[in-house]
Length: 179
Image 1 (cartoon, helix red, strand yellow):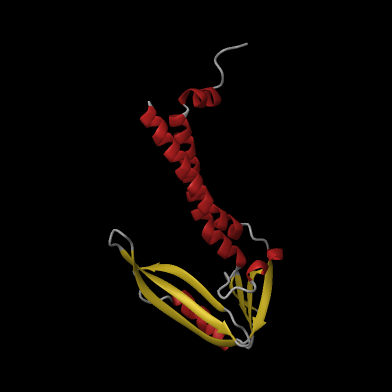
Image 2 (cartoon, rainbow, N blue to C red):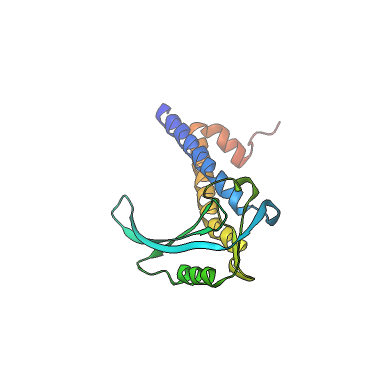
């Protein structure tokens, strides 16, 4: 019985830790347009880099980074995405070309990150053409938030059921005794 209880507490702690990982993701998903500021300037440089990433099981895939800088700015802007087995990222290359052709570039970042060296990019425009939408950035992290949130809650529920089986049954099934 004590072993189940200990495993239950471990699962509860694991669930809380997983939910704690969700907080930065929640902040990005729930960032409203009023929380963003626009930084406008001319492009200094833009490059797309593709590199191989390998997980702990030896599976590899390609990661693409679009990195760019604005003149008169002291910030690095970076977008990263997994491109699977491809060695060329057509999407980021198109964005890079649009940035290079534009007379002015606008980038939206969080107000709270305005002094950071590498703020998270929520939206981009080249002249008046939207190259990256804030809704797309938010939607990109929603599945991750759902997955981690569900995993955390499941760990907490199973851990609670293992650590406090009688109390858990009362809460879930309701009290069987009428007073």
